[in-house]
Image 1 (cartoon, rainbow, N blue to C red):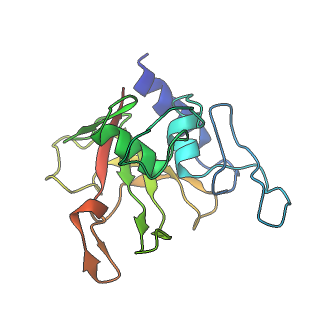
Image 2 (image 1 turned 90 degrees about the vertical axis):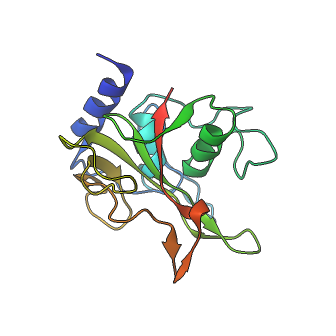
Amino acid sequence: MTRAADAVARALMMVGERWPYVLGGGNHVGPTRVRRKDGTLSALGFDCFGFAHSFCYQEPRHRPGFNRGSWATVSDDINCDAAIEDAEHKRELFEVVDVAGVGDLIVMPSIRDEDGKRIRIGHVWLVVGVPAEAPPPGTYRDYDTVQCQARTKPAIKRGPGPATDARTFRGLADDAWRIRILRVR
């Protein structure tokens, strides 16, 4: 079995499990707790990248030296933004591909305001099935995916990929906000 096939099998086993969405949660060994601003600990859980990449691909989230450079918004840890930045620069762990295959990640970057505050958090879907014919570029809904999403219970669910290419937000459009398909190297 390939590494991508292992990741997909791991994801499919978790569909419907009752782990909650926890921002910053999850790693290569499973769900984790996160310390909240008030000092208390969250429930055990995953966020989207902690699930779709770290857990499913069995990769630690903390990786000293990862994504270091002038382009980086996140270094030493792996999340949606760091993965895209790596794929577009050093290609240490990820590469951008044009057409998704089983095991690839459909990744939407965060959007930050003028002060650097994140106003849209990034998100990731793990591709577990591809349509017989490749959809047109920028179309993701035809892919069968698994994701960990804050708005749903259970958080880990199977369904279609994203409905849009994500380059539009609050009535504005920017090509930098678009989804990328990343292949794990």
